[in-house]
Image 1: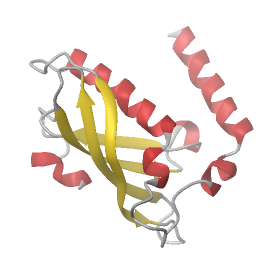
Image 2: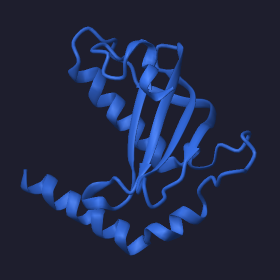
Image 3: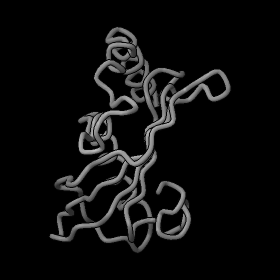
Image 4: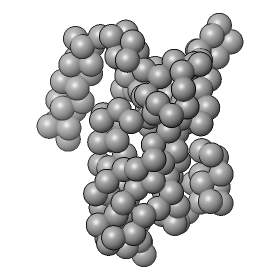
Length: 145
């Protein structure tokens, strides 16, 4: 527990040192071509999805023991910028994942900023078709589509 808390504090400090504004400059901006995946293809976002998916398949009963080995066709479906009434910026993304069993599944995910640890960085919610056993995101990942 002590090690986990230390790791979270270090991660938060690194995020602060890197500056969240610098990361925003590289993000997908409203009006840019839909062919450009922008923030939806950010390596940090995809790494977080891979790590959380590994945890999910190990801890949810009756899911196949597979891992994500690749991502394809990543793109942004919708962008909701922050404003005075809505302080959280949201990006709705989609794509496909290649799994270690050789199958490809559709995936939908949401990037929210600033919603990370202690309000620094981003939060990522994702749903992979066929792996939302408890329908957390509704039937067929409806909430994130």
